[in-house]
Length: 245
View (tube, rainbow, N blue to C red):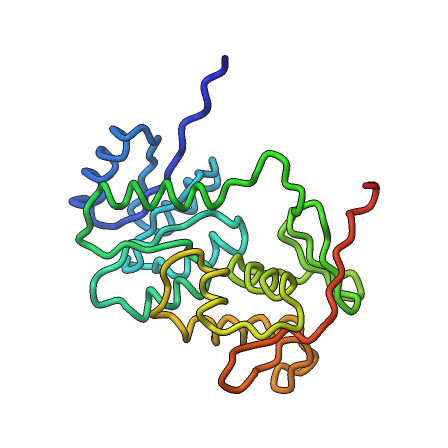
C-alpha cells in the first residue's frame, strides 16, 4: 500500500528565534516544513512548489503578511493561518475578511498550533464523492460552481472571488430569500468561533455587493434587513453540470 504524502507547510516569519524552533517542532510532528523569512522568499518558494497550508506572520519588513495573505487566497486558495501579536486585533479582523482560515496569537503553545493546523486541513478536504459539489447554483443568469470555486456573470465572464467571498455567496445560495443574521453567517462562512467579528460580515458583504450588484448602494440581490441581518433576494436553482444525468 502506498504511504500518503506528508503534509507540507510553508512557515513565513522574519524572526529566526521563532521560525527555526517552530519549524523543528512541526517537523517532529510529521510535517514537511519549508521556511521563508519574508514575503519575497515566500513567493519564490511558492513558485517552486505549492504547500498544503501556509503559516504567515502579519508583521514583516517589506511586503507585510496581509498583502501576501490576499495573494495566497485570491490566486491560489491556499489554507492560511495567521501568526499575530496581541496588539494586532484590527489586522486579525482584516485577515479574516480577506479569507484567512484561522489565526493564533503570539506567544502560543505549539500543540495548540498543531491542533489548529489539523482542524483547518480537515475543513479544506473535499469528500471522496462530493455529491452536492456536482451541482451548479444559478440565479438570474449568474452561475456559481462549488467544485471549481468559480462565479460567472450573465454574459459568461468570470468574476474572481476570494475564499471568504465564495463562502458567503454560497451560504446565500443555500438559503435564498431567508433572513440570515450575522452570527449565522459567521458560523457558515468562517467555520470557527468568530463572535468578535461582526464587522467582518458587513465588510465582506460590501465587497461581494461590488462584484455582483449593478449598484452596490441600492442592492438587488443582497438586501439588508433592519435589525435582522441580510437576505439573498433571488430564486436559486441547482442544476447538474453539463454532461451529467
